[in-house]
Amino acid sequence: MSRPLLPLSGFRAFEAAARHLSFARAAEELRVTPAAISHQVRTLEDYLGVPLFRRSGRRVLLTEAGQILLPDLRRSFDLMEAAMGQVKRLAAGGVLTVSMSPSFAAKWLMPRIEHFRTRHPDIDLRIDADVRLVDFSANEVDIVIRYGPGSYPGLKSVLLFEEELFPVCSPRLLSGAVPLRSITDLRQHTLLHDETINFAGPIPSWRVWLQTVGLEQAIDLSRGLRFNSSVTATQAAVDGHGVLLGRSLIVADDLSAGRLVRPFAESCPAGFGYYLVYPPQVASRANVHAFVDWIIEEAAGEGTGGEG
Image (cartoon, rainbow, N blue to C red):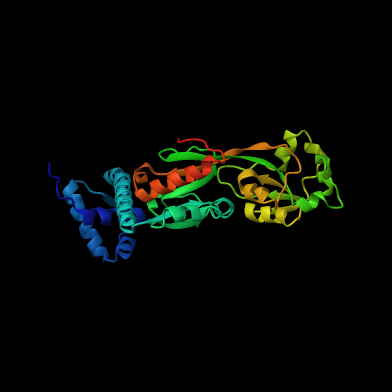
């Protein structure tokens, strides 16, 4: 069944004029004259058989028909842009853009990225180290790794890691002049506070961990050094500047290498996990499939969940 010829230039002119409520601003955006916008809108109105705009003094307002048309037209444009973006990304060949927090990129991915590059030398991997929310319809990012509760409606999600929190410090602190044998010894040490922004909700703090061990009132939590970056906070602990409530994934390699130690065994759940998230429509792409398989395999030995 053939589709009727639609006045596409009229749709574009209408959407711009409706968004600005101004023919002049629509003309400026589309780089045509206001008369051209008026003509294209009139052609669309003739095609539909109803007026889409009305004037109120000097103002241009949408009619009821215009208000009905605009939302679905915008969604149609968004879908077309998304489809064209996907086609362009296919044309780009092996380029794959993955968004993740700077701390995850620095402390987990970078020590392992050579494994992926060796296995898939044809994939040009681009790392977008950012914690901002991603609009997949903008086609700037293919996959995200996010720290959160795991609820991502309309998207595929795979739990890579759950996370725990526990104190860590440089081994030098254990052998220093000030003992660190019991939790109450924290009174004599500088506390390092990781206050990294997390859009999914606040990351549990020293207060939560002390509540877990029943010593919330024993330590003055107003003192210490505060950081808005997990990487910087972890490096401060490695350098011996104090005791950090470490995030298990972020401090794992430093613990394995002996740069950090756990003075106490007690831990508490963070309440969030690291999730691999991507739109279902990109799952069949070879480079997406390759990265998803690789990172799940890498994560498997360190504790992983499953698909959502």
